[in-house]
Image 1 (cartoon, rainbow, N blue to C red):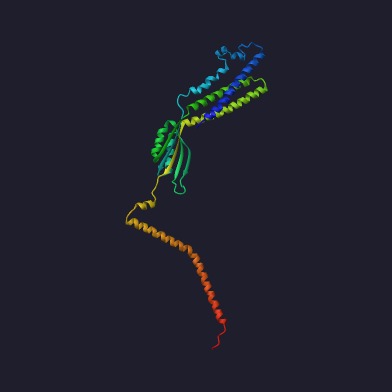
Image 2 (image 1 turned 180 degrees about the vertical axis):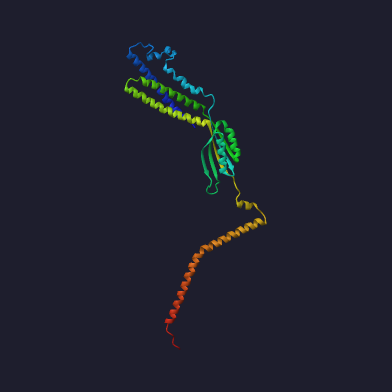
Length: 313
C-alpha cells in the first residue's frame, strides 16, 4: 500500500489553509484593535497576544498547534513494516487442509479475509483452494511455519517486507496539522463579525474536515496493514498416477492379458454400438423391401390373368 502520493497532494492544501488562517487571524486582530481605539500593546487585544512577551506568558494561540503536529512523529518509537507472503502447498484433501489453515489462524487471533475454491475444475486441472489470511505481526513467523508444515507438502514460499515508517510519520504529521488548522479556524469563526466572514471561515472549516477524514482513513488503513501480516495460501491436490500410466509400468503375462481383455471389451463395445445405431434403419429397410416384393408379386399375377391364351401352332 502506497500513500505517499496522496499524502504529498494533501500536504500543500493543509499548509496553504494554515497560512490563510494565520493571515485572517492577523487581519481580524488589526481590525479589532483599530475599532476598539485602545493601545496596540494592551493585554486584552489580539495584537498583544502575537508579541513575544505575551507568547512567553502562555497566551499565544499560534504556538499551541506546534507540539500537536510533532506529537505523532515523536511517538513513533518502532518501525512500521507491512509483511506479505505467498505459500503453495500440495495436500491430499484441499477442503480439510483449508479448514485446518483457518483453525490455525483463528487460534492466534487472525482471520480469513478471502477464500476461493475450485473443487471440480474442467479438463485435467486439479482441485484448488485459495485463502487470504490475516495474521497478527507478533505471531507471523511461527504461524507461517505451521502453515508450511501442517497442511501438506510445501512447494513454494515467497515473503516480502515493506518499510512504511516514513509514510506513517507523514500521514500522522498531516493529521496533526489539519487538526490544528481546524482549531484555529474555529477560534476565528467565533470572532467573525460579518455574515460574509462567517460563511468564508465555515467553508474553510468544511474543506479542512474533509481533508482530515481522508487522512484519518489512510492512517487507519496503515495501522491495519502494519498490525496484520497478509499470507496468501494456495492449496493444490497431489498428483495421482492414472490407470494408463499404471498399466504401462506393469510387465508380464498378467499385464498383457489385462491389456488384451481391455482391447476386446473396447472392440465389442464398438461393434454393439454400431449395431444399435444401424438396427432401426435396418428394420425400416426390411419392412419396405417386404412390402415392395409383395406388391411386385401381385402385379405379376394380375398381368398373367389378363393376358389372352396363345393359339396352338
